[in-house]
Length: 236
Image 1: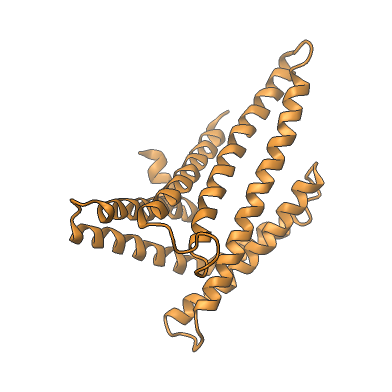
Image 2 (image 1 turned 30 degrees about the vertical axis):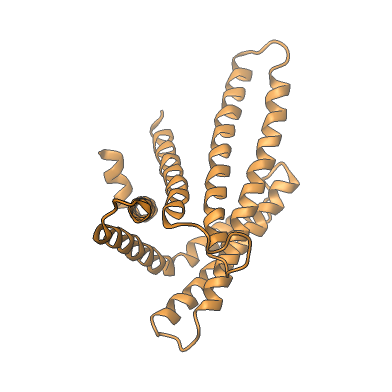
């Protein structure tokens, strides 16, 4: 309960929890819709709830540009990274994320008739940038896993002292985290492709429950990661 309350007090924590409810509602509504014994009124209510929560998150993202800029500026060209491939995958992903926000803001403003422009092309462009970021994130995780595998293989040779065992444990923990990152990015990427214009790969072919399932998986992983960070910060 304390972790949940603490999460709700922060913007990031609240956003992750809202995301879980958003996609799980879509999953349940989609399953009801696909079921022969489904209740149409319940389907509509769950899917409506999911849509409204999604709109809420889009509105709150109007204020994310600055925090993204500060993160990108702090990361810079990734001089702290040991691997060049990881560095440049991260740099390009940061650029895609930074460009994503203004494109989504324009689409949002067009939908609410604040700007006299068509929103479709801006939603498509923001989705392309999101897809690019997710694909780069997945490639980054694959590269990090490859590097960790090498380190673990080298570390397991010969006699291991206390410090070596601690180092191997850190590698194992990071490996598990990167596997979760990979699953999360790929889950979101499948949805991002679904929301592309018709004719692109499987765009528009997912049933509602599958969109909800993929989003719920990535959202629960995000919640788990937040919980792990929270616990790690409490350790002496």
